[in-house]
Length: 527
Image (cartoon, rainbow, N blue to C red; front, side):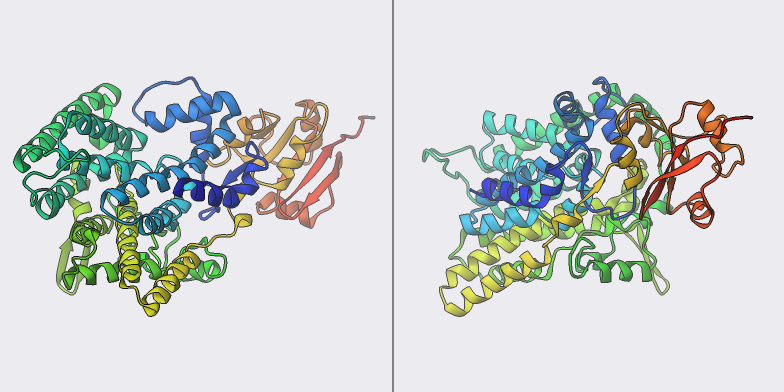
């Protein structure tokens, strides 16, 4: 049921993209036209290979989808499918933690459609594969509960998926695993000497289950290091060559209050929130700050915590609260910047130590995905506790808080897409019949190079014999090089020049849009 609900929400949210999946890109353009999505799309179109930057679970899936639907559509399918998959995985984890179907559904939907997921879906298809984190924790805790061959196999597969789907998933899993094992075993798995399985048979003793789980993890880690030596040998032998500057950690780590600030995708509060972030000097790292939990989720989580504090034994899920709270706090601290100075004291945080070990990681705000998962699960327990209370007041509070959370996570489908091409002028040119070759008055760089392959090289960029669109002989050069159109972007210096002057000789205005102009090349005949 939860998967069906998530599919319906995903379709409603992504409908503008589903209408033209090969021309549009899912997600709000939070930090402008960044090159990350287009690098991934181009990679999907290439032959499948394994290398230093390969994240096979996502890359191979995207490449196979691209063989069927094209690179742009494959990107969109990969991102959109992650929403119902994340909901399904979170629901399974919630049910394992003894949440009711209603509480598990709230947790699953809150996790799947979190601001973190929506923000990264717009730029980072690998980070958007959030379904693997709850699946990994489910496998880990099931192994602690049972330690059967099937549970060990499931743990191995889940570890493979969370690690090879995206680099940060592997980092987060590696960091939180010791905490997740210790917390779950001390609070849950180690307290029941011989828990019963679904058939009523006793399972292995606690310390044997712990030993099997830890031993399996060690073996998996050894295999992982062997794979890293094979696929990314250059990184293993020379980490410094792939290191980011330490200053980047401060820019791309979360601020603790980012978890309480509404997301910029919000249809009513988004503009105000964006002005707030600009005022506090956050620009380049704005995407990473989209880790909002929502006050509805926070309050529901606090209701769950209060249930544990007062020793509420009516709900089995309440016993899991300390495990979830410990993991949430661990991930939150890991998501913060390397250090904070207050007065004469400097507090060193986990990201500083992690940077010394793995300097090729810089965006520690991505630990926020685990904070979001734990908060959603706690909120689900809060829903169960309010529903179990049975009073009209408690049910009204429950409905009100769930409605508040839904309102805080609300988005406008019309704001969750943009054309893969930079301007309407580019799209107009690609739709013209016959032979088309256009010059985009933009220098070739990492940001603009995708325009060429996205248009099948019908649009090219400045360079070579034509490097200036204000050249007096521009039309002659364009004609000599076989160009039929000239594209001038409205937000460029050339765009301002063309807006203030009449069309140069040999160029005729063919189309004008808010974000650019198109000129047809019609050079004067030489006398």
